[in-house]
View (cartoon, rainbow, N blue to C red):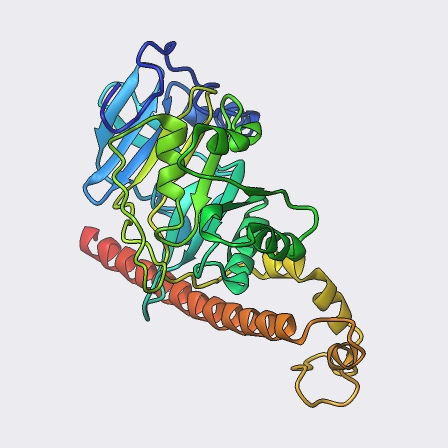
Length: 359
């Protein structure tokens, strides 16, 4: 086993597809496409700037970055992806269709999409019981999870820093009563083990959250890997000084795989319209009763949302957060549409140029 893939037991059984998280979703793709016959599946367990590390039955190797020519915004292979290798070379011949994908718009003013993790079963949305706790940020992460159709779990860390950690639990629970909220001490095995019900053999989980909230501490506690370096938090603003520098897939003793991702100082949403409608289902449904279809819920007559606020039925601050996210998503989605159109035009120009040269 290479250094890129940490296993809790050095004497673990041989790697199997099922143990790596192989599902019928992937097998069906092989059964339906004869062109894929004979290719060897392997899963991406590490993503660095220099390339990928993949693992599979009789496969444990580093590869250069892979870009699926038909992949669009999700063209780059990312952590958790399944690749099909030519066993003779080996080189990547194909990337299997994902059943889930976490992505965000890249930080800054660019239009690129940044992939976070693929083929995930559960997302642990991690925050801490201190100044980092932010309801608006939790709603953003929850929107990502709902868009990806992945089970979300709120994980609240550092309860020892709060006079009343239950108050933070209640705020998180109020966002969605159907979601489990776990308040844990990330440094203790007993605390980390409260997450094990979602960590069965072959399951894949991802931790998301800001830097310094305890994601890597949870990973280190669950895996027993001391090589994961963490630091404390600054007393002036409770922000973490540790940021994971690369994305890694770690295996637990239970047989589950978990992803440790870099802390996200900025989480810009795009292509998450469905996720927003789920997270804010009550407001979306209420807006259907507004007099105007394009109601901005500001000063328009017949606005059902403003009327509900006046009656004290919904929270005005939550409405403002919803409006902000809807506007942001629409703006970023339009930017992505423009980018895709330009990329498509560029691709056609390149094909035309190459065709002319061949002639």
